[in-house]
Image (cartoon, rainbow, N blue to C red; front, side):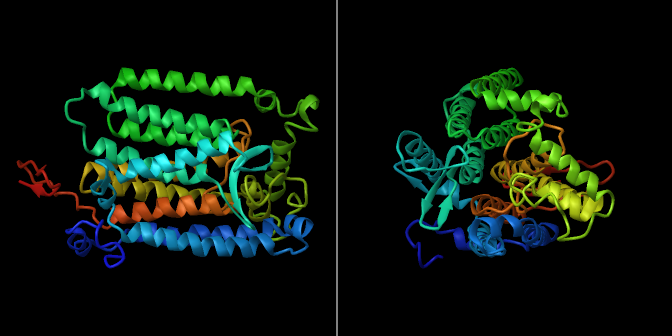
Length: 409
């Protein structure tokens, strides 16, 4: 990497890399365990859909293996490059993180005003090259975290506290609004949640946080009112067994209920589920958690939930021991993004929230979601290699941190 990019890599990058420790062990295990669990679930959940759409019962499984290899390479890249590098590099006096986010926003705007985007399932979310497609809104999530962490880690000179939060908050709203217009309300909500997590971690003034939260809720309600099917989903969520919604809006959640009910405690057996045979919509992507519930039962769903809880625990632990504010905000944003999306998907499939299409990180089939999740995990592992040990407390003696983040008496 140093030979490939000799002009833009800082001179002290190699020194920073040599100071790195081993990455967090539980997070490293999860980096392999979650995609592996996803491959097993996809192999079972996608057989019927794959055969019906392509004539090959293993099409989606094979494609996911290819996606996994690409995503693993992306995760290794994000892990190997010191995360400080993203804030040190500037073009025309502006940080690299801004240019990366601006590039993604530019692509999203281009998709909105031209025919570049590929339309599928009623949304223009993908850019397609032959058999391959990419969803830029998914890639926007880890890049947005990078941008926000870099902005708040280095306060702008000459700006008061409120002014410092103005531009990043507007950027969050801009990205979410463009994604919502595709329309992709689920991803837009996740972008808002990720942005809110970083804003809270950066200690946004309370009154400004309340104002932004109210505006976000009003914008979400307006988006619901703009599309009749969204309002119908909300009504079906409040009364899922109403015959008026049985054949269309509430069909998704009712089939998920049947899947969980059939699985009971231990499940009907891996590969033996019936709901994936054209009863559940998108059984290999958005509702794969219901397939897991039917085939592996309550124990299987709790195992997946436990993996994400472990991810959240280790992610916040890394944030607490990060060497600087940049690393702390980066770890918080990544952890909240992965764990929050997992909880949101599980809540939707189990009927705790209105139905919206959102993948389960690492588990659902799809290259864009897997790539974005792998990039985020690579960043989190990157921060974990530079964490500091918590100082020991001695009786009658307080410990503080110096400017470099090292403990001092």
